[in-house]
Structure formats: structure tokens, C-alpha cells
Length: 113
Length: 447
Image (cartoon, rainbow over all chains, first blue to last red; front, side, top):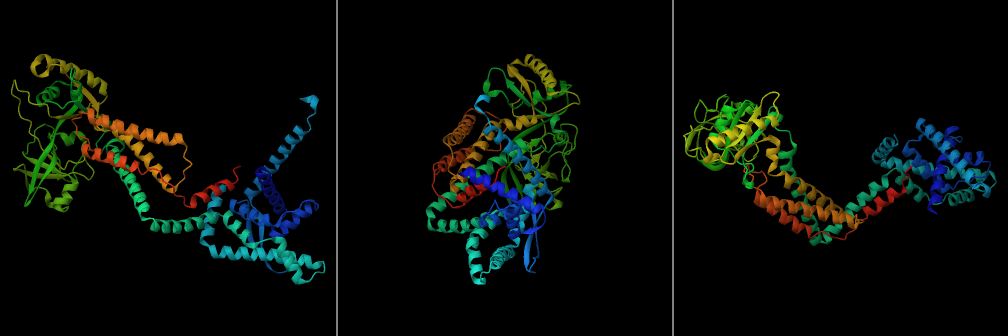
């Protein structure tokens, strides 16, 4: 049970970094964008978004700035930092190689053992 | 890199606390309103949309709490709360508080005092010129194990000085106590009577006045005296005109020649006076008692081992020349640091280790991080016992004639205090801070 939660937390971080890498966004915008690029297959729990954002900002992967939203209201926009970009790359590679390994294991036929 | 940005973010969070809170508020409210607006596009009224948005979002307060925690603020808050709680608990249980404070105080006092002694004797660099070239010479009796590092007879010393070719210079020190008298004030102080070349050999200067500055053993000026910095401040108030004053030492008049720098000592930090010594001329058949401490400086390129061999040769010559006095006596040449430490090293270092561990355990107990495994406790007990045993063995067997700074009665008292303190060892008291520390460490992502 704990393991699963960890994975989700790490994955959410990756998705947020990816969403922000495509352009500066405020919190709600990040939520919408993830939904959009996942073609509505992934829905992020609203309660876990902001803690993840604050954590990522605390660790220095993203930076925040107050700006104006489309409706001329004050909103906080997040952008990816240089360190964050490197982190995203590393995490993506990690994820891909992990997926390969798991796929390999799961696809093992009885004869190959 | 990450740690640096975390620290920076944490510092900022502490400083702009209120701003942070209001910003989080604004941000979360914006989110809810944006969601509500999206819902309103589906032709829902504003109130319904807002309500639904709020419900979808969940509680704002827990999010803010997590936000604070993410920035490391919650630990800070907990610390603050725990301090207040702790103080309240201390007031409520005065008996416990007093005992806990007393045990910590004892532990700290023990560590500090033992460390001071160890520092002065073992760790700090010696305040002499080229201390690595300084050695001390001891007479050593082959058949008596308790006289392996004995003080030296003055006549043997003079013979050594005459006959050797390995030492640049040799000087003598005679430790003792004398009554120091100036004006109305009179006190018994520790002294080291030294030959006139002592300070030149060590390569130290006085900060006021001068040292004997004589190449020979005899002081041409007659009865002069050097005083310690501590004594200078205490008795003369740091008056630079103290040079040339006449004082009485054991009722004999002496002139103050100079003041030694603060922190200067020679193996014994209690010494305040260095009167000049007159080595009496030797009379045959009376080589005098063995009572001198000898220090020497090796010549360039000579090692202590080489010096030892030559001195052994000289000692056996003396043995043949005066068998009544010198039978079975030989010489030991020892590095000065080893001489200083010999009396105390064997008891100080383990004691220091044991006492430090005990202090750690005391702190851990009071803070009650008590997931101490049994073997760890056994290790602490073991090291304490070892330290205590070594100290007792040292007390029983040592015949060091060069007095240690850490005097015997004090050591015994310390040990008994430690025993007492040790019995207050186990306690159960659990401030909330430990829980929070555990939580915090478990929620961090260790990647």
C-alpha cells in the first residue's frame, strides 16, 4: 500500500514538471493541461496538486511568480527552472527504462526461463 | 543543490510567514474561483458553481498545512509548541526536572573538565620552539619496575651534560611549593626552580621583562624569578612596573625579572613561579637525591633513538664509576609530549570517551529517543566500565613523578559522581518533538 502511494507521488511530480515545461501555468492551469495532454484519461486529485507544487518549489525544480490571469485576476504562475529541466529529463529516462524492465519481466514466456 | 534551495526556501518561509499564508490563501481561492467559472459555463448558477468547486477541492486548511510542512515550517511550529509544552511539564514535575537538569549538568561538567585536561596535555600544540626536538631524560632502574621513569640526580645530570654529544643543550627543573610573599600578602604556591638556560632551551620569551637568558646553568644575576601571567594579573593587577620588584620566596629575597605569556606552562599548569636555580657544586661521594626533571634539545639531525643509545653508554660508564649510587640505573630518553601525557594519557582518553558517550546517552534519554538497542546500551556501559577500570588501575599503579594536571582526589570525586549520575539513567518522558522528527524523516523522498 505504501509503495503504491510513493509511486503515485513521484509520478505526479513528473507530470507537473512536464506540464510546466510546456509553458508557465498557474495551479488550475496545470491541472487542466495534464488532463488535456493525457487526453482526459488521467484525472489528478485536486487535493494532491498544491502540496506537490509547494514541495517542488521548495526543492527548487520550479519557480513561482505572481502574474495576471486571462480574466485580469492575480494568480501565481509556475515555471520550470534549469535544475527542474534536468530533473525532468532524468526522471523521464528513469521511467522509460523502468517501464522497459517491467515489460520485459511481464512478457517472459515460460520457455524463456 | 537541492539542499541549498531547500534551505533558502525555508529561510524565506520563516521570514515572510504572514505573507506566505496570505499568498497561499489567494492562490487556493483563485483555483476554486477558476473552477467555478468553468462550471458556470455549463449554465450553472454562481452559488451552485462555487459550492461545487469548494466541495471538489476539499478542505483548504489541510492543503495549507501540507504546504507549510512542505516548506519545513511545521517542524519549526512543532519545535515552538514542544518548547512551551516542555516548560510546562518541567514546572509540573519539579523533582524530575531537578534530577534531569542535575544529571545533565554533571555530565556536561565531567566532559568539560576532562576535555580541558586532555586538551592541555594531549591535543594542543606545545608553546615551545621546535617542540619535536625537545626530549626529557629520566633515570631508569633496571630492577625496580616502579622507578622506570625516575627523576634525576643533579650530579648525574652534570655528568650527562659534560659527556654527551647529541644534545644542543640540557636544562633542569625542580618542582615544589614555596611561600610567596609580597607586601602583606603571602601564599603557598607551586614553583618550578629552573636552571638559567631553561627558557632559552625551550625558546620562549617573557612578555614583560626578560627571562634568564643565560647559556650557562648558573644565573649570573643571582636570585631572580619569573612569574606567570595569571599571577601577574592576580597579585600585581597587570602592572608593567612589576619588573625589578623585590619579593620573598620562602623568606629569601628575589627580584622579579619578567612575566611569562598567558597559557605558558611546562607539564604542570598549576605552576606560577619560576625562580632561578643554583645547582650546587657536587661533592664526591654525595651525588645527592634524585629530584630533578631534565629537559634537553636534540642537535640537528640527531634522533631520539640515537640520543638514547649514547646516553645509555654514558649511563653505564657512570654505573661503573660510582656503583654505590648508580648501580642498575640507566637512562630513558622520551619525547616531551609523551612525558607530559604519560601520567594521564592512559586514564584520560578512555575516560573522555566514556564520559562523552554517557552525556550523549543522558541527552538521548531526556529527549527519549529511546529506541536504543540493547547492544548500544551495553556498549556504553562497557566503555564506561572500561574507562573507570583503567582510571582506577592508573591510580593504583602509577608512580609518575611528574605530577599530572588531573590530580588524584579530583579524579576520584569525578568517578563517584559519575557513578551516582549513572543511577539516574533510565527515564521515560516523551516530548512530542520526537514524533514529529520521525514523521518528517519518513515523508521525505529519499531518491
